[in-house]
Image (tube, rainbow, N blue to C red):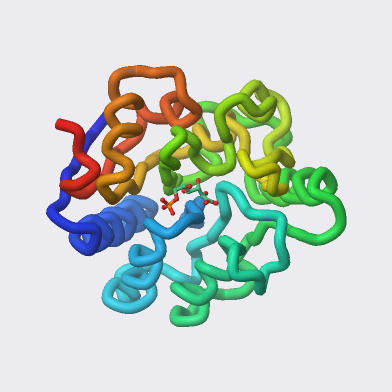
Length: 232
Ligand code: 6PG
């Protein structure tokens, strides 16, 4: 577990954007696959990627995926896709075919199955090979209850080891689509982006090894946190 404590959320975002661009440089010439986190913390990272850091990303060969989605229309205020579109896609030369949004029409289970198919098509195989990660970068957030993506405590989705994508529910029983652990873990580089005093306790509990959803991805990840979220 690699930890970087940044003085402010802005410094965290700037470091995370620069780190992601450096990972793109590691992938000389080939496709660069990034799985995006929703929520509020990563928004500034996306804004910086499309603006200050725009010249450092190979937009034509970078593909954008989502770790989870709220099952609402893509123009809904709660949509992760909408947040990323406004923060980044609308402000950068992103080929539309490189944006792999989670569908939110029809039924949640059909949308999950469709997205799993899109991931498999991109990967080029029906089974994940640990020696060939699906993503180059996995961006993860952390909820105050220890969730990440839409893997919430106590939900059956935590036990899913076969399906790549599942439909699930938030604690308020709002329908969500989420990648499952095997897929979230299939990344060359993963990073948790966590900021704010309200996250300090859950960060402490995750780092202490408490069995919470995010903990299962914590050990292999970089942690970009700000000073107010730092329990140490
Ligand atoms: C979502 C995210 C979720 C988020 C955490 C942290 O769809 O909301 O995928 O896992 O990363 O809830 O959210 P904040 O960054 O807003 O604290």
